[in-house]
Length: 117
Image: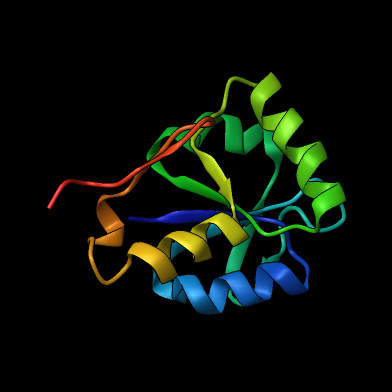
């Protein structure tokens, strides 16, 4: 599974390490000054580009709570629901990663679905 990390701050850097760099396709950020540049060797895309490619990736929002709430609303208003917070991703890995193949997890706005064993 490939990820798009939403957020190019310190939480985004931590997410890149924990998700494994090879599994991260790119970053997305709302800051126009960051879009088009690279962050730890990964391209930073705009929200406009995210809306075109999002279906092929799981979006991990690596943001503080205030920014997460804003981005959650932005994603939902755009009809994008295949996202979760970095904290939720970590919760799934810590609690289910050994029992389930974390690459087979599906996510929707309302719940996390784990494959049956």
